[in-house]
Amino acid sequence: PVARAAFATNITHFQINMSNILTSMIFSGVLERHPRIRLVLGESGIGWIPYLLWRMDAEWEDQFKDLSLTMPPSAYWKRQCYATYQTDPIGVKLIDELGADRIMWGSDFPHPDGIWPDSQEYIRKELGHLPAAVRHKVVCENAGKLYGLM
Image 1 (tube, rainbow, N blue to C red):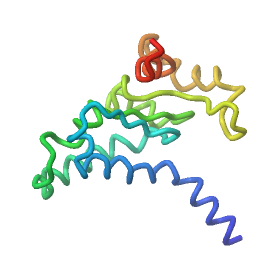
Image 2 (cartoon, rainbow, N blue to C red):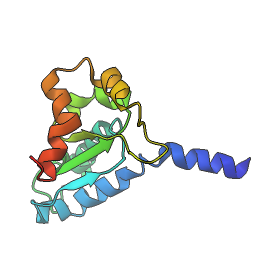
Image 3 (cartoon, rainbow, N blue to C red):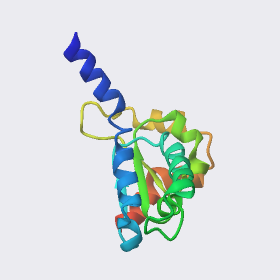
Image 4 (cartoon, helix red, strand yellow):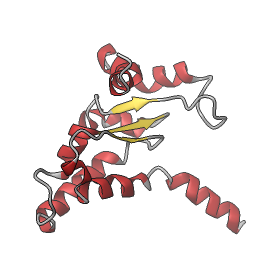
């Protein structure tokens, strides 16, 4: 039972561990020094990101203005970062906070833990209420532009 509980814990919060990568890349100044770098948090989920950006901005403003950043941490997200997700109904509610051009949906095909072959159902269920232009960005356009396919 202990190993199974540890596995459940790891699987449940592995996406949130991506916060270490995002905060490290921003606070270390990597994105400041290299403004053309694009950081993609793959299979990271998106619901946690707006809180983390708010928290980073608050801490930077409060006690870390001595770091070599010329703008608030959330500005680096808006300029250089992206995240992918498969299903995240909480994150979808926060698209305005994230920026519709910063997130990308993916099915994780052919991995068995992905949402394929139910991809269309997930897209319809989670993104169906959004304007067609936003859905197209999240499902297709953002990835196409980022990876030079469009």
